[in-house]
Image 1 (tube, rainbow, N blue to C red):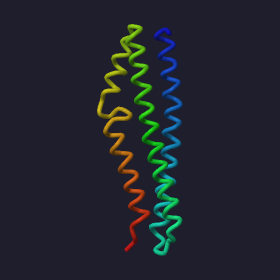
Image 2 (image 1 turned 90 degrees about the vertical axis):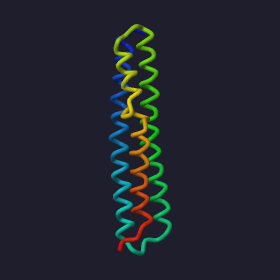
Image 3 (image 1 turned 135 degrees about the vertical axis):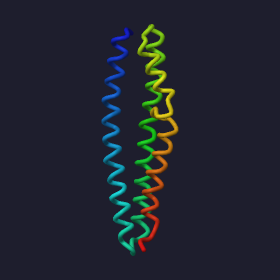
Image 4 (image 1 turned 30 degrees about the vertical axis):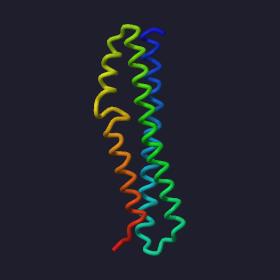
Length: 127
């Protein structure tokens, strides 16, 4: 494949991954809304708390694995671009190695903090 074809496929991937992010943001927002509803109801039954917890866990996993997939794809495209002699490959590779890159430690922290905040709302009681 040529450099142009690889970069074109990479940009198409970035567009679809951006749509996954929008979906994840909506699901995370909905998880916070559901968690807040349970938090505000002092006598919320156990079953909704369990289902909302499972929903929040599934959303956090989806958010996390979407970005792990992005990290893998970025690494593969960087390697392929370097193999065809493109300078873009080294720039993508340096972005992939960054702490802020998808799948990096910041992704772990954000995913876990979202989950902890949501579950904290679900399982704590309003004073």
